[in-house]
Image 1 (cartoon, each protein chain N blue to C red):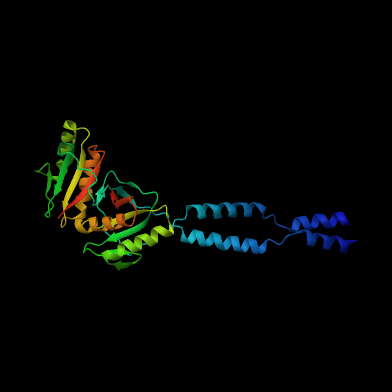
Image 2 (cartoon, rainbow over the protein chains, first blue to last red):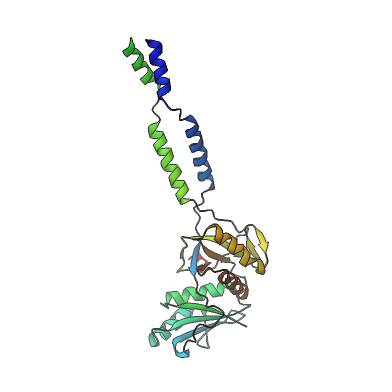
Length: 133
Length: 133
C-alpha cells in the first residue's frame, strides 16, 4: 500500500529544477547586461546635400558662427547670451521663419549646441544646420 | 496510515510557485528593458543645453573627441568607415536612432561630416548629445 502510493506520486510530478536553473541564469545575464543609461540629446535637422527647395530669404533667420566662436544673427555680431533675445525679436517680425545655423568648419561644436539650444528656447520651430565651405 | 504520510510530505516541501512567479516577472522585465548600448570608448565633455531631452531609442552612439577623432565601439574609426559601421549597427537594431556625442571643443565641420555620413546610410533621426543645465 505504502509503496504503491509513493511511486504514483513520483511519476505525477514534473521535475522543474533544470527549468529553474535556466531561468535564473537568464535572469542574471539580463540583470548584468542591462544598462539604463540614456543619452540626453538635442534632435537636429540637417538639410540634405541636394537642394530640396530654396527657402525665401525673408523666411530665414540666419545665425552664423565664425571660426573664433563669434555669433552673427542676421549678419549682426551678438553675444552668446543675447542670441535668444535676438532670435525672439526676429521671430516676432516673421513668425513662420525657420532658423538656419551656418557654422564655420573650425568652430567648436559647443557653440553649435549652445546656439541650437538658444534658438529652441526662443521658440523657433525649425532649426537646421549648414556648413560653410 | 495513509493520511499521516500525506501530511508529513506536504510539510516537508517548500512551495516555490510564488518565487517562480517573481523570477519570471523579473526575467520578462529585464528582457523588455534591455537595450544593448555599445559604448563609444571615450567620454567627451558634452556641451550644456536646456532644451535637451532623453533620447528614448538612441542606442547607436558615435563620439567625437576634442582632437577630432571619431570613436565607435571602443575604437577610433575613420570618417569613411562611419557609414558602414552605422549601417551594420542599424541592421542589428532597426528601430534605433543615432546620437552623436561631440566634445565641446570638436570642430563643427567634422560633426556635420559625420551627420552627412549617417544620413547617407539612410537614418534621418540624428541627435546631438548634451548635458542638462
